[in-house]
Amino acid sequence: PELIDPCQYPNEGIIGIDFTHTTDNRFNGGAYVRCTGASTTHPFTFSTERYPGTYKVTVRAPDSYDQASNLPRWSTVVNPAFVVSGPLANVTLDVPVPALHAVSGRVTRNGATPELIDPCQYPNEGIIGIDFTHTTDTRLNGGAYVRCTGASTTHPFTFSTELYPGTYKVTVRAPDGYDQASNLPRWSTVVNPAFVVSGPLSNVTLEVPVPMLHAVSGRITRNGATPLLSDPCQYPNEGIIGIEFDHLTDTRFNGGADVRCTGASTTHPFTFSTELYPGVYEVTVRAPDSYDQASNLPRWSTKVVERLRVP
Image 1 (spheres, one colour):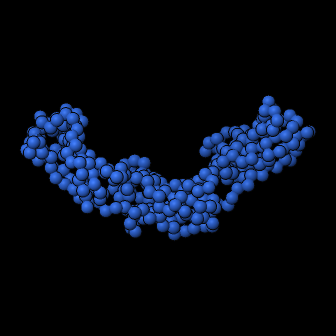
Image 2 (cartoon, rainbow, N blue to C red; image 1 turned 90 degrees about the vertical axis):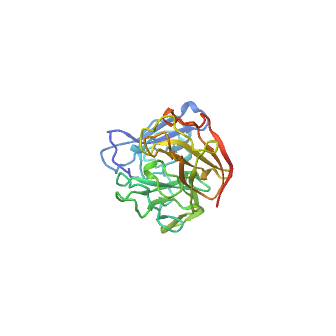
């Protein structure tokens, strides 16, 4: 085997080996393959002392990234009946590893390349993640990232990874934070429930279907009249009060809007605008978050529409 990166400390344990006695767990023991120098190549030798008997021998998954190698990320039983009846030298513990295949391609949104809302901040930053979940053996699960290629909102949204042979459920993950916000949806999407890997694959397209957003705008009233603020709002475009749109059948489509400050005054049009996916929504005007948003609207949240249909 080879290490992915040189080990950092002399005699550091690169990978562990467990010897589990098949009839008397008092005799259980272990060994480590240890670092022999600041290199990615090592003899991967081990030495230990064991009591007589029969052992199940397991090569352990590495404990951390420091121990990462081209050995698998899972533990492997390399010998279920290893007999110790005297000194043993030149023992070989062979770890069978399926061949990894290169898989690359791109993510699309309704047939087109997605766009970031804001430029990503860091070179090679992960914009969005992709999960490859093996359908029969979770040890073989893998992943990939679409990564930032420059300080721009346009990117090719390409990815590359290596996967073991088999069939995978492929999921394009919801972004982790605002930095990764794009016109891809805020939820995770299964883009292929049965993606077969039997050799290298290139030009793979992972299509994310996204319903069309519709513009929704209007105003809030209080007993038929425009509300009034108790005090002028302090900051331009400050949110005065919030509105929640809860989709009745699919919470992924939930949305919101804010009535925003238009000037240092207690009078405002109390208008809002947002974009919503098609469907039927329950609409709630939220209680104000703080004194800054105080108005002659009530201090509690109010359901104002039970069924708002968005085409």
